Structure formats: structure tokens, C-alpha cells
Figure 1 (cartoon, one colour):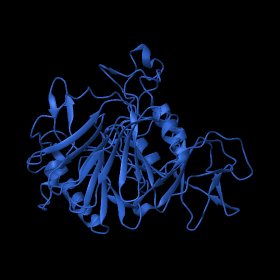
Figure 2: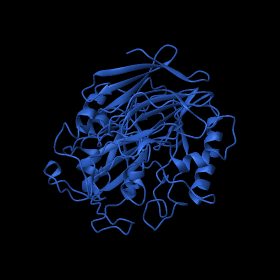
Figure 3: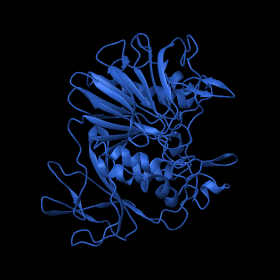
Figure 4: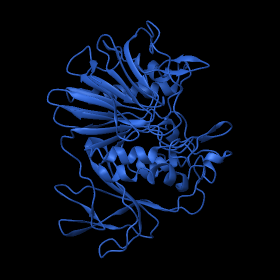
Length: 442
């Protein structure tokens, strides 16, 4: 279930300065907020961009592969990915005459989404991908683009078509981990939203090397592409991860992106290398959070969030991440200076608060993949998603849609939106000092 900045362009006719048929073009924000322009194309060469009346040739990130790759799950990628950093000082960059979305130095409106692909996984999970009501991601993207956001955050799990379809509702769907599934699960339906704003992308467990990791590193990961960091060799839990990094929002607020793609929900052993890896990464989060007063931590798996299964009952936070956080020995469970965590993985909208210095928990994993069953209400008294940290208040909703964070005069406002862009619920967030809180106004 996983943040990057993206822009997508429709296939275009040949022009004087971009003589290639473009599949998709997008911008991602990488470490330190560096905007990175990406183009996915089936042409034999990378295109050139136009800025300040000068051509800007792009370089190959990873070449096309018409033979199954040698990764953990062999897949075919008959498209190459090209990239280049946004030129310093450039006010506009265009491709085929179409402007790419420029990163804002102070984004005021942020669209949040996650867990968006169409779920096809044997033996029983067959979502009706051919029914726009059952898999409404394209409409979600259109509605979210109409918000005219400054930034888009996706909290992971883009790719879900892992098995052959055995039901009428998804008949004819591609499956596996190659370009054909990435195209229909991600790039085609998300095109309008990729055109609207840059993206911050988070890696989910569906993008681990054991699953769709090859596509993740080819298309979305903001780090350099290379051997050992591309799901191109056999990797274990100690190496299939990326380091945390920060994306500034303004002078006082920043996002911290954390790769939890390999996090296990089973109770870990005392000497678990996975826990050791995450513990070290959380120490990096501590260092990053010390650089600004206000921090939002983005990762895929909930820690102080929760889920519900009609058979198994209430589900607590991720066990391996909880074990790693307990090694920090800070006065709060999370690193000091983190006011909010934004995650997915549980296919729901969820906003929860706890006591003390713990951050607000926001889950926004309800953008397309099969939704979780409706949660019983109210939440059980003294329910603790992590040991010793009870939930004081929570709002949940199991309907498709997306979220919007908008900066008001003195606070951030959170809106839960339905598929068609209608406001369902509104919350004013109190993130200035602990205990962090929210007030529902609709």
C-alpha cells in the first residue's frame, strides 16, 4: 500500500523542439525539494524541453527493455525513462509547447491520495477495473485536478494488478509488473492530476522489490537509478529501502519522506535486521526534523492509525515500525518536532489524535483500490494502536475519494472529498503545539 511530484502530458504530435511521441511527462520533488522532470516515452531518443527560448536536452534515466528483465519479478518495459532537474531560475519549462507544473515555494493547497490501483490478486480479490463506479480513480484524478492544487502527495500503493483476471468486471486487464500494468493502473488514469501540479511520492508495500519495485525505480523514485537500487538484483530486507529525505514547504514547514515499503506487520524478532534498518532511519528523521519547527512525516504504513477486519477485528499499528520507534527513547513515541503523520495502507479516510506530544494521524488510502469494510462506531474505549498510546478521538470513512490540505490564515484546514469533488467533512487542524488536535466543522 505509499510521495513524488508529477506532471503527465498526452501523446503529442512532433514539434520542432520535441521530435518524440511522448507517453507521459511529470515532475517529482526529490531530496531538499529538488524538482526532477521525467518523461516516459517509447521513442528511441529522449526529447528536449524548452526554457527561456533554449533547448534543454534530457538524459536517459533507464533504457527500454523489450526482453523480460532479470529482476525479482521479470517484466517488460518497452519504454525508456528520461529525466533532468528543473533548471535553476527557470520560470517556465515546456514540452511540445505545453508548460510543466512549476514547484511552489509556499504551496497553499495540497491534494492527498493513496492506495489507488485496481486490485486484482488471486485467489479472491478481483476488483471491477472496467467499472468506473467500482474503480473510480480516473474521476478522482479529474476532480482533484479541478482543485488547482499547488502540490500532490501520494502515500503509496500505485500498482495492484498482480494476477490474471478471472471475473467479468476486470476482463481483458493486463497483469504483472511491467509497463502495461503501470500504464493502466497509474499513468493513464492519473494523467489530469499529473498535469495539474508537481507530486511528492511515497513508496508503498506494493512497490517493494518483491512486487512492483522495478517500475517504482524506473518511473517514480527520486533518487539516481543504479545497480542495487533498482530491484534488479536479489535483495533482502536490509537493502530494499531508500533513505529518508526532506521536502521544504516553506521557511518553517517541511515534509519528511520515509520508505516503509518492506515493513512487516508480524511481531519482529529481537535481532530483526528490518527493525535495525528502520531504527537507523528514524534517527535520520530526528536529524531532519531538527532543521525546521514543523514537520509532517510521510510513510505508507500506519503506526498510530488503525484498521478493521470483520473477521479479525480491530487492527493495530505496524509492528516492525513500532519496534523501531521504541528504540529512540524520546519523550514522545515519534521524534520531537513531528506534528502530523500522513499514511495509507488501510483503505480508508482516517483522522485520529492521541494524548501528549504524539502527532495527529491522517490516513488517505481511499483513492481507488478496494475499500476496507466499514468500521464499527464508536472505537472501543482505550484502544491503543501502539503500546501505551490510546486513541482519544478518531474520524473514519470508507468511501472513495481524496483529501485536500489548505493553509488558512493561522491554521491548516483538511477536507475529505468524494469522488466527484464534493466536500464530505471539514476539519481545522491545530498543529502549533502539543497536544495536537482537530476540530470538525462539517
